[in-house]
Image 1 (cartoon, one colour):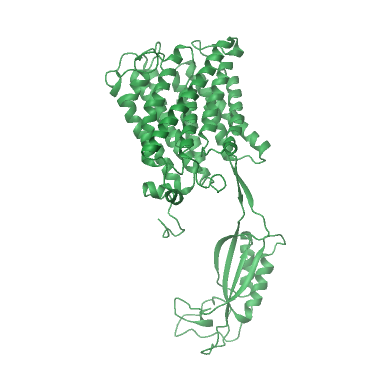
Image 2 (tube, rainbow over the protein chains, first blue to last red):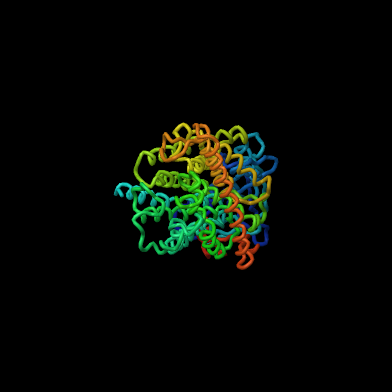
Length: 149
Length: 416
C-alpha cells in the first residue's frame, strides 16, 4: 500500500530524474525556527523477521534504513553452552536493530507496520520506540531537515 | 639393519613432529582469542628449545650407555656426533641409531608442548622457556632413560611401555598439575566465561594429532614389522571407541553430545593405547579406548571440584589416560601380539607383570610431579612464572608477543 503525496518536490538544481526518496516525505517546507518534524523509529526485532519487516516497511513507502546486529534480553531466556564440563549461561540473545528516520505524521504508521510484521507471539519479539530528532542532514548534498529524508 | 625399518622410523618421526603444530591448533582453538598466539608460541618454542637441547645433550642422557644404576645415560652421544652401530641395549632393532634418536626427539618435543595446555592465559613466556629447558633435562631425560632405554632400571625390571604411557602421557599430565599448582588459577576462573574461541580450529588440530599418532605408536616398533602393523591398527580402534565412549557419556550425563567431547574422547583413547599399542589384541584395543573415553570424560570434571585450573585438561586426558593405559596393559598384554612382550594378568601372566606396570605408573606419577613442582617453584621464585593482572586481563598475545591473532572490526580498521 503506497501513500504518495501530490507534487514531488524538486531536487535542488539537479538534472537527474528523481531517485527513490530515502523515506516518506511531504512537500511542506520547513520554516526557520520550527522544530524538526522528523522522528527516529528504532526497532529491536528477532533476526529471522528481517525480511518480513523490510517488506512491510517498503509497503508503507520506507526506502532506507540502517540495520545493526545487537544482543538483548527481556523476559526471554538465553541458552547454556557446555565445553568439556564447563557450563556457561549465555543470557543475551541475538537481535537486529533497525533505525529509520521518518516524518512525524508517518511515524505511527511505520511503528505499526514493524510491530505487525515482526510479531511471532512468543517471548523475545522485541520492542519499537520513537525518538525525536534534533538535526537531520544528507551527507551527499548537505540538505537538512525533511529534505534530507 | 634394514633400510625399510629406518624409512618407517623417519616417516614416523615426521608424523610425530606434525603432532606439535596439531596440538597448537587444538589448544589454540580452546582458549580465548586474546591468548591464542601465546599458547601456539609455547608449542613453537618447545620445538626450538627441545630440538636443540636434545641434540646437544638430552638424547645422550636418555639413550646413551648407562652411567650407573640405570638412572641416566652418559655424555657419549652428546651432539649426536659419533653414534655407535647400535644404541645401548637395543638388540634386534632394524632402524639406524640416528633415526631412532631423531624419532625420539619428537616425543620429547610434544611432551614439553603438552604442558602448555595447563598454563594458558597466564604464564610468562620467558619463564616458560626456562622451565621447559630445566624440565627436559631433569624430568624427561631420566624418565625416558628408565623406561625407553633397555639399560634403564624400570626397563630392566620388565616394565613395558610401548610408546610412552609413562614417559609422555603420565609425565605431561602430572608435570602440568605441578606447574599449575605453583602458577595459580586464572583470574576469574571458573565463574567467568572462558569458552573456546574457535572450536573448528581445535577440531582441525585433533585431526592432525590423530594422523600423527600413527607415527607415534606404530613408529615405536622401531621397524616395519607385524608389531608395527598391530600398533597402527590398535591406535585407530582405541581412538574410535574413545570418541564414542565420551559421546555416550555426554549424552547420558549432560544431554548434549559435543564436538569437543568427541574430539577429546578420540584423544583419550589414543593416549590410553599409547603404552599398549604393540602388546594387545584389537579387541583389547577397542576396550581400552572405550574405558579411556569414559574415565577421562569423568576426570576432566574433577578440577572444578578440587579447584585447580588445568586449563585444557592435560591431567584429565593425558595424565589419567596414561594411567588407564598402564593399568589395562598390566591386565591385557599378550605375547601373541609381540612375542618379546609379556602376558598380562588376564592373559595368564600372573600378578607380577601387573604389579610391575602399576609400580612404573606410580614411579612416573611421583617423580614427574615432585621434580616438576620443585623446578616450577624455583623458576617462580627467581624469574616469576606468571604475568601481572593487567597483562592477564589485556591478553598474552598483545602483552607478551605484540601480536593480535585477528584484526578486530568488520571493516578491518578498528583495533589492531
